[in-house]
Structure formats: structure tokens, C-alpha cells
Image (cartoon, rainbow, N blue to C red; front, side, top):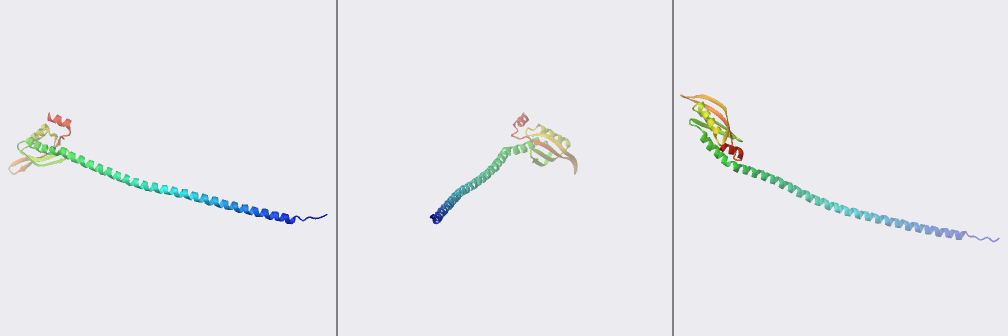
Amino acid sequence: MPRVNLLPWRAEQREQRKKEFLAALGIAVALGAIVTLGAKFTYQGWIKDQQARNDLLKTEISVLDKQIDEILGLENQKERLLARMEIIEQLQRSRPESVHLFDELVRTLPEGVYLTEVSQSGRRVQIKGAAQSSTRVSALMRNIDASSWLRDPGLDVVQTVNDGPSRNAEFTVFAQQIAMDDEEEFGEALQ
């Protein structure tokens, strides 16, 4: 029987398959590397774009924060100006009140009574002075009670002081000034 040797043919076929396998493996590795690099560059591009959007938002937010601070500063300035305007309006309204107060003090002052000090805290008026007698102090309090600009007289102190040959009564009287903007009370006081 003749013997045929097929070994070299099989060995060549194995070598061919091995080369094809290595070539396919090389192509698969190359394609995997290309896909990986492509995905990496794509994700890096997306991240870069998102960071650019975030930076834009941060700058816009900082601009808006500055505008909000300016608005708050303007609102505070507006409130201060309104408070000043209110004080000025209040002073304008109360300007004639001091004139009326002094005029009314002169009108309510009976003969024989002398004022040494007049002070005011809010609407409360403190009147200090000297009178020839305590009955004149009573007359002053009645005049204050009947006044259209003063009300609620109250006596704090009456002292009899010997001043040489004469005797005087030193006194402290309190009263409430009627405000011009208190229309109800002011109207009642005038009637």
C-alpha cells in the first residue's frame, strides 16, 4: 500500500488559519481601539460643552447676583429716603404747633404767674414757674383745661418759697398738647 503524506498540507492549512486568526484578532483589536478612542473623544467633547454651559451659567448667575445686590441697595436707600421724607412731612405738619403752643401758653397765663422753664417731650409739656399764690396756679390749670391746644393739666409740685418780703409759689405743671393731625380731638377741643 502506498502511503501518502498529508502532513505538510495540514501544517500549511494550520499556518494559514493561524495567520487568518491573528489578522482577525489584529483587526478586532484595532476596531476596539478605534471605537474606544472615538467614545473617549465624544465623551470629552460632551463634557467640554457641558463645562462651557456651566461656566456661562456661573457668569450669568454672578451678574444676576450683582443686580440683586444693587436692587437691595436701592430698596434700602428708598426706605431711608421715605423715612426722611416722613420725618420732614411730620416736621412740616408740626411747625405751626409750636407757634400755637407758645401762643396758647401766653393766653392761658393768668396775671401774677411767671414761667421759668417750658420743655416738651413728645406731646407732654412741662411748665415750671412761680406764682404770687397757689390760687393763681389753680387758675393756670383751669385755663389749660379750657384751652383748645392743651389738655389734661396735672400738678406735680407746688412749693411756697419766701423770697424776701414776698412769698411765691413755685410750681411744676404738666399738660398734653393737642396735635393738629388729631382731627377728632382737635375738633372736640375747638368746640
